[in-house]
Length: 554
Image (cartoon, rainbow, N blue to C red; front, side):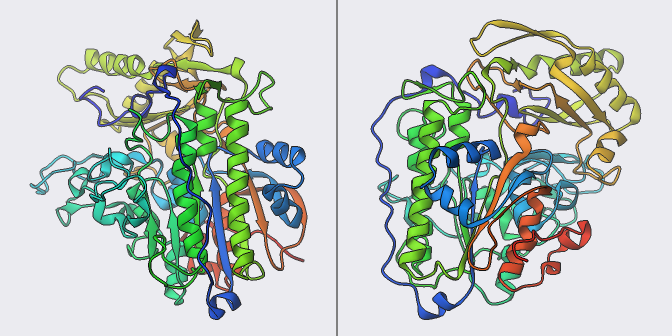
């Protein structure tokens, strides 16, 4: 990573090499639930939100067709499905999850990625906040923000990990390293994830009406879901997925390990269904709104091999390969355990289940893959700029490149934007294909580059907004920006395979229907509030974007 830019996603957390994948015996937690929910809980409405990250709508359809008696099939058969649902752009974890819980796109939430930039803030660690200090700072809301990114508990200091992970705090903001966040020049204090969000969340609305909330996700920085108040989620369980899994790598590099990791989150939700906190040690009542995200499908799509088996899809680009097929079956099994727990607790008549995904992944066709190292491209851009602007700061202030290029520039002038755009579209080079063989690319692997005011207009954001990228470039289908020859799929762009995810809503008073209408995952948020008999207009993003709830009955 060059010192000229705070982060570059394609060079960060991307050591997807086959040699790093270790075959190891793992123990996935048993799916058990506490004895009994209270009578009050049984009579009150609940929403269980499940995000299966990486799952495309065709994946769900394929699995249900092949497994008609599965848990996933039961949700589809008894509920309403939208087969043309789309995530926001960029289709990544932060904007994807925030869409589901705020009802807003990045232009409204103010967060375009978990690794982003703000031209109005001061760099992390700044103590001199005078008006003369230059503005501009990276925002890293990933594992790098943990007190200890190598520990599953993010630095809490639990003994007996990983088996003791359910003892992890439900208030993970205390596990964030404040010194890693940018500084607000007005207060000269760090801007934590929940303070970065510009609008409220469903969790805040639900809490304001005296109902309980819980959620489980992959980083402590999912503190962002607390909303600007910082208090939206009473029980937020966030074991660190990029921590040491005990096999010389993290939980994402071996799909069996990812399943083990996801199993801890499932057990946390099972405890909550039974009226306990995520640890299973305190009776607090079943949350009105609860849920989790799964990572097993996402890693199965990215890994070239795991446990000696190929990841991703078969040559037809549709049929899951062995690792992905196993991951989908694992997800189905765990969702089945959650549904059974609801039934055992007599909550199935009052709980609506919503199934979707933060993002999809591309490409699914192995032959379409073109891996391009983005480092030389961005270094070349900086060098070309420096040649014509001696003494100027490097042009690339920050960049996040997975299967799109998202760039913030140190110079926000129209001339700089045009320079960057022209350079990228004029850059050709050599990448590699699914087999690691050399493969040429043109125009930096891009189709369209939006720069300066074009980028703001693309996102429908205000020109000059300090958070909006200065350059957003759509990648050619199949392009993944990485300096490795490992990962075979990515997300974070605008590719249809990144964006077409399922939305299934199943529960009491939900009609069985399948809709081909084009809808957005932002519509999940107002739908959650309607299911809980609350007003969707209490969400600020719903008012700003006029986001409509999904129609689930006649």
